[in-house]
Length: 331
Image (tube, rainbow, N blue to C red; front, side, top):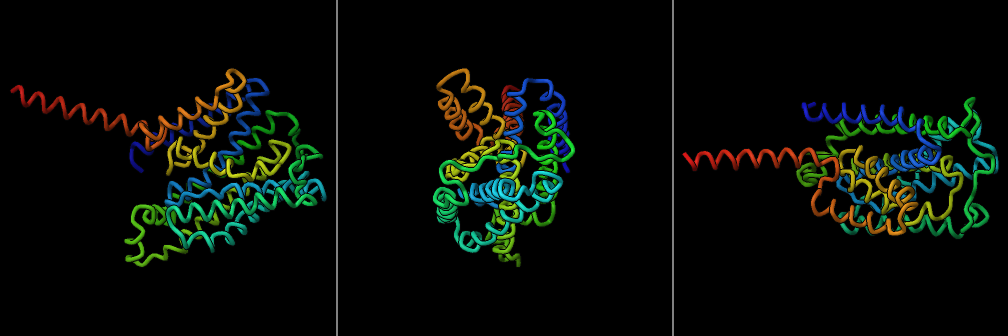
């Protein structure tokens, strides 16, 4: 690990510690806002595994998010599953559901590349949305499903927003750590190689299709986990949770924060939820602010917000070289 990477890791750790300390001191609205952002950030990180590390831009991530969300609401409302100690079983169950769906979809999507991959994932995601919208007896149709029993009872009073925030924060930290270990492993390095030069990796003997397929499944699993956490956070799941906008939001969050960094998706999630849920209470034209932020980021920060330190280093290096050339010319 280079010095710059160590500094980034330390900065992320300090920010997370500050988040855990400061947020409970705020009002209930801010606590809920941050909790929602953390729950959705898991989805953004799962997409970043595809976009930033594998080079696969997917528009179907909402499908796995929706499967985890609907499975949570259905099992809780009909059988009471996931509302007591079995809540801890619901988390891996949501991941398994997301992984299974991704395994099926991946058989169709991974064979395509570029725009074709984007369109296939979009079409598959819309199939799940159509199922959620039309299967009224199971999903509640347009009305969705509310968590009638409230938040799970696991020995902690999760009706308290602060307690629930810490639970979601803990799940988020474990997810971030797991994905970080994954992308720093030989498997993750192989994904980066595929992103940079897929043909070269094939020549070197790597099974490129299998690596992309496994990354697709893992991303689906964490998408399902995000859906489980989101349902308990939001208290309701509707077809809006599975609609294309959800996938686009996750994609823009990853790009806004910095694709290929994991933490970038988290930063993007906080910015989007901050503008959408907080700034919208102050001004009615918050959409324009969000649009301007996206445009400026794409034009001037192609590496996202996490790429700002690198841009500063390049700027300083260029300035130093210019000064050096100027001095030589003077002499």
